[in-house]
Length: 185
Figure 1 (cartoon, rainbow, N blue to C red):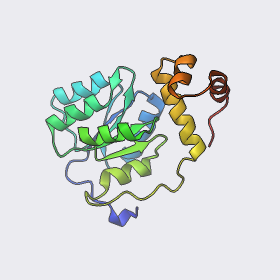
Figure 2: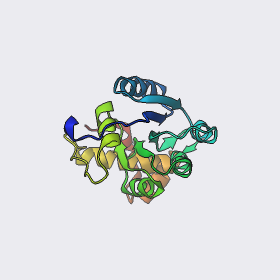
Figure 3: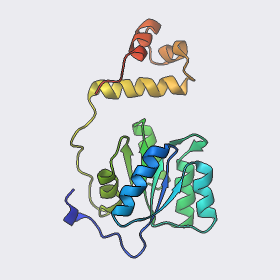
């Protein structure tokens, strides 16, 4: 998206970033401060909800979907009840249609897969409401999407290979070979 097409930040540049990855959270905070946002950080669902309970109602928010102490959608709902016009972006390392739909229903305006860079996040935060996001310049390959799905099911099955293979309708040894390999690009 062209910078000229983006909405101005406005009078309230407050931005809440909720992510349990400290390196990513701090790097994104520095990048967004450089773009004119006033950043507040939280590393858990508990801290994100506590920030809103203490009277902080940001104009913008970037929330990771899977946090160590719970689901980021709980933070999205808390933000929505505090301030209905907050532009919320949900980030996740496990992009799935079901979680994207849940994020939008909870009140997020966009859903981005990690690794998302500061430009992608700023574009999503400042995009006009009626604007459709541009297609990704480097979309994930089909092999990468398959690998991500297998990893997600594996994690949901508490890293149980036999249960994961059963749910994916896959031979257990085939699954073990897939899990032993590095992620495709």
